[in-house]
Structures are given as structure tokens and as C-alpha cells.
Length: 572
Image 1 (cartoon, rainbow, N blue to C red):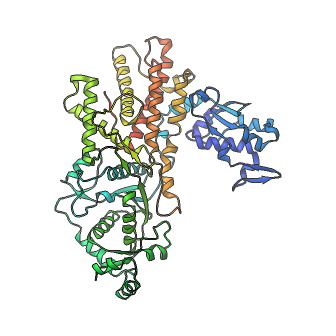
Image 2 (spheres, one colour; image 1 turned 45 degrees about the horizontal axis):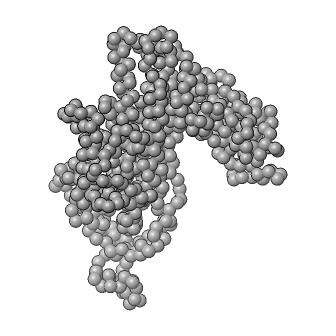
Image 3 (cartoon, helix red, strand yellow; image 1 turned 45 degrees about the vertical axis):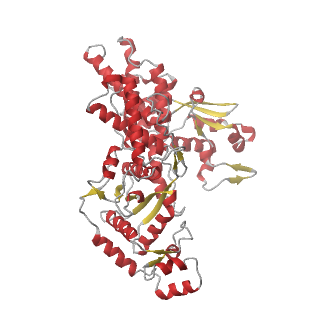
């Protein structure tokens, strides 16, 4: 097939390839939409279930995509693929579709091999930039609200912040970076005093949170919110309160203690406005100063949103979810019509000890410094190493708290005698270490060029990418470079999804898991393959092809780490 046509259409993607393979296998039946259908006595499976992309090194040795025998038996009598269908599969083409080199029916099913040399060229020749950004550019404004940072009686402090609350802040920061990459205008709430301890703490973690001068107040907005709630149609009137109290309701004592307080019927809010997923026990809520303060901050954070669609994402702990649902409905009762979703985090457990966020960061930083000194000795000093240790500590903390599904609990090992190793395939330190190895590799190559050992990297048109035959090379391209754009897209898709109630579940753990898996496979390849070989002309083509691949991989690291607000470490 003509690879030139494929290159001109669009970047190669996994999902369009699977769809095209499914279409080829099903023929005209692919045009019929809906769930599984019966044609005669035969039930035809959904397109996305017909083919599987392989990912393990073992399976990638003989196939890249597989349609299992069970699927073939569903489609065809005795599982025999008709010659016309096989011809369609082998001549596959289309926008974003990977070129097919061959296919055959074996015991496990119909397996297809991709034209790897053509794919390497298509992906790497253009510098791989198209593979490092989301598939689409989205529009809209997202406000990431972090209840853990709203003042109760005083500005929050790292000495009182729990690890569960820290997890919500890191999650909000990560989501903000991800959504910005997809085109959303993103802002954060609340605004914090610029000279506060909490801002210094967040900056130590690489978090850039909005600030205001220490003497700044939001009183005008608070008064406006208070006035809106007093005039709200959902305000509980004295007569209604008296009837409910005389009826012996469970909140009678509380009402007696707060006689004359402003109360809002939250259950009426979400029932009348058709907002599913809110706790039916929300009932009636007494408006207090802290609540009004948070509503005023939310109002402030949305004032600069010029997009037609504004979504407020409340990143909250499971312990605070009920309170945050109250806040969301109070805001709605005050007249705010923005879409509100709740991103709820599970608890953080530290068996055998109790640490605040400040103590946890101090512990990890001390362990990182100790590990660096053990590995690099006396050279661990000065501002450069201070910056490295700061970034590595932030990476360790982020990966520990963000690598788990956000609704699930996280259990941390916070034994003081433990260490943070730069070796071993786990966590942010391992990821940063392998990113640094790529920078070291290219520094070594540049020094070789300066010494006259190697020529400059030539244009891609002068290279034969069929030289990339090592299984680790295809693994890095097929499992990481090509699918990355589709991975970036998922958080925006989840946010756009209609229905599902107040909660939104986003696969926030995927970037961390992606980077750890990438680092395992890159480390294995790097330890096995000598990239900068002998300076002999007949070896240069393969070396340059590998440098093209690893240069794209370096940019992939940068792009993925950027969604975690982690700058790459260029030396270790």
C-alpha cells in the first residue's frame, strides 16, 4: 500500500486503526449502529470488541493486533475468514490507520502485523509533535475548587492539613494542567494570601496557586451572596420552620439553638432543578460565615470566565463530600447556574503513624537528600542540587498520591528509616531518573560531535528506519508514543459526559501509571542496547534512527511530566 498517502492524511492512531480493522472484518454490517444485533441466528459483537491491540513484548514478537477465535466464530461459520474479508484486512487504509504488513489466522485468532518501518518513519520523521498533544482542542472554562484550601476560622496551614486534603490539592493541580492542554481556560479557587505559609508549602511542591495581597478582602462579594441567599426562593421561612419543629423532626434541637438563622432547603434545590446524584439527606442547611466565604470565592473565580460553558470541579476528600454538596447547592440557591461536578478522593492511610502534610513533605525531602548523598557523594551541594532535590521530592509525593484511582484509598509507608531509592521500577523518582538518562545520552552524543567522532544527525529522508529491529524499539513507539494523544484526551471526555450525577470519575491515575510503565520499558531497552556505538560509518544509520526515536521519547517525557507540573531533570 502507499504509505505516502497515509502520512499526508493524519497522524497514526490506535482507535481509528481498530475501527478500520473492525469494519474490514464485518463488511457492510459495520454501517449498522446500536448494540449487538441478530442476523439470522448469529449475534454480532460490538466493533471495539472484535480486535485487541497487543502490548506485551512476548505477543508483539508475532502480532500487533488480534481478533480472537471466539470473535471469528461469532462472525463466520467455523471461524473461517472468507478470502474477500482477509483481502480487506490486508489492504487496510484510511485517515490515522496504521499500515498493515501482513496477517494470518492461527490458533489464537486472526493476527495482524503492522508495517513497522513505515510506521517508524511516519511517526518520527515529523519530529513526533503531533503525537504529544490531545486529539482535539476543547472550549470552555473549568474552575478547580479545592475545599481543603478554604479558610475555616483562619487561612489553612500545612501544619494542620491532612494527607487526604493534600491529595485533593495535588489532584486539582494535575487536572488543571491536563485540561489546559486540551484547550480549556482553567482557574483555581480559592485565592490565598500571598505571604501565607500554605502558599510557600504549595510552591515547594511546584504548585502555582492564585494569590492576593495579605490585606485583601472579598467582603463585597460576601455581602452580595448573603443578600442573594436571603432572597432565595429556597429559603426556609419562619412558618415552615415552625411547622417542621412542631412535627418533632430530627433537627428540632439544632433549630432551637439557631433561632433566627438563615436556612436553605437544599433538597428542594436539587429536586426542583433536576440535579441528580446529590445526597437525599442534605435537607435544610444553616448558612454560616465560612460557607458564604467559600461561595464568594467561587463567584470571584468565575468572573473572568468568558466561555459559554463553565464547569466547576470540586476536588474534595470523601470525608468532606457531604459538606461540599451542601456548598454546591447553596451556591445554586444563590443564583449560580454553572455546571458543578464533584471529584471525590479516597482517604490516605499511614499505618502506625500520623503525619500532617508539612511533616510528610519534610520526611520525603530528607529521604531524597539522603538517597542522593549516598549515590552521588560530596557533589550533592549548592543551588543546583537544592533544585534537583526539590523537584525529585515533588515527583515522589505526586506519584505516591496520584498513582491510585482517585476514589480508592492510598496507603503510604512513612517509616523514617525507609528511603527513597533512585533505582527500582516504582514511583516518581524512577521516572525522573530515566528522563535524566535521556538527557545524559544526548549530552554524550553532542560531545561526540564536538570531538569529531559522530556527524550531525541527518535529515530523516536520508535514513532507513527499517534498521529499528530491536523489540524494545517497537514497544516504545507502539505502546507509548502513538497512544499518548488518546490518553491525554480522556479527562476532557469524562468532563464532557452528560449524566452520571454529581460525582465525576476521571482516570486521573493514568498519566502516572503511563510514565512508570514507560520508564520500565525504556530502562530495560537502555540497559540492553548500546545506542552510541563505535564511530563507524556503516553503523551510523542505525544509531541515527535510534536517536530519532529517543529524541521523540525525551519529548514524550517532557509532555507527560508537564501535566504533573514537574520540570524534567537534565542531569543526575
